[in-house]
Image (cartoon, rainbow, N blue to C red):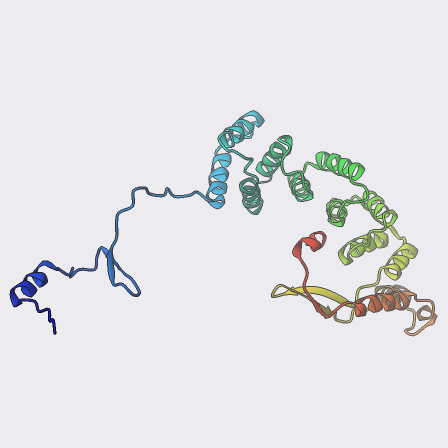
Amino acid sequence: MLALRGSPLLIAKTFEAIKIPTSIRGTVVCAAKGPRPRYPRVWKTNKRIGTISKAAKLVKTIKELSNVKEEVYGALDSYVAWELEFPLITVKKALKTLEDQQEWKRVIQITKWMLSKGQGRTMGSYFTLLHALAEDDRLDEAEELWTKLLMQYLESLPSKFFDKMISIYHKRGMHEKMIEIFADMEELSIRPRISVVTMIGDVFKELGMLDKYEKLHLKYPPPRWEYRFIRGKRVKIKVQDQPNRVISYREKNENIEPNSDLDEDDTSEDISGIIDEQFEKDADVTLMDPAQISDNS
């Protein structure tokens, strides 16, 4: 048989030529093939600036300026001059930061500048502007904005705008305008919240309109169920029992005995029964997109 044998000298030279690297500093250990060298990169990535840092820079730039309209608008124009698209997310985050810091004049300036550019024309932007105008005691501009929104979006205006205007007038003691807006809500078939019903009821009591006060609480009784979000799920929770305000008010002021004839004509139980039937049709726990409850936020 033919046998191949290597000389001991050749084997020794072969082992001398192979050198295994002792340091693993510049190598990467592979799963099956062992260490391999890491080649240096030809290019390096630059640090990307996110919207949070951009918004912080915008807030810092705006707060250093004066209240002159031309100066503020010029700084904002130069800020977005090199942007390929309008930085709507950055501006929105900057507005949120200024709103948390209660810089209402800056919020008004940036919102008006954004709307003048034709950007961000959403109900959220208009509500932010309305809230900022009210907090800055610019009631005339707030009423002008409210009138334009009501005329343009009559049937699609969210209920939180009505609630906001009623609360604005309630803080300033303008009862007649509160009642006018509440009448508009009833004409548009917008169901008011409990806070709005409470404010309107207090106005009726102050003005001595006891009949309207009673009719108001009979028409809009407190709900027995409410929805809350727990861990991202919409959960139906039973509200604690609340006393009937009409009966308690009459007993306090007119000394009416409990369980009198007033309970026989009370239609609040029928209305609340209809509401309970509607709630029973719903599931106890259902998922819901947060965008679908933007009016209640």
